[in-house]
Length: 133
Picture 1 (cartoon, rainbow, N blue to C red):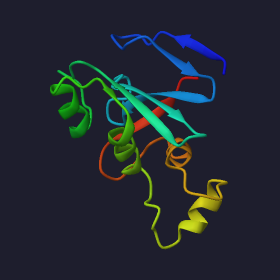
Picture 2: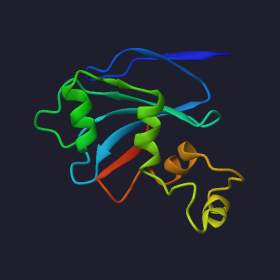
Picture 3: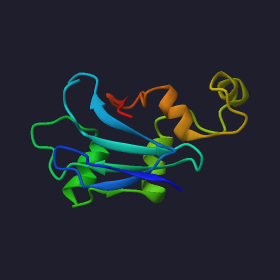
Picture 4: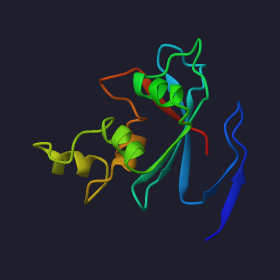
């Protein structure tokens, strides 16, 4: 598999991303210039990784991002990342899930695709995702 190396500015770690992934800046609707971190989504595997700041002093992330950062966790992957992402889209057991999937062009549930279509916007915070590649 080919991969490209991208340097993430503003104190984020240097990482290597496979080409089938997309990277988004995490932003706050009320503070659109704030760069709160990155989310890298793999649509084929329905997985994601969050890259958070070491400090959110003076910034406006959601409570979970601030909590992880305060505990020294700046890279969130696996179940924690997918838990966070799943809270940003409708649940797989929703009553009209077939219609929702169809509106996203999906035949099966895929939280990463659904989140990217909705720019990561959800009801419980003011965050959104801005695509950078």
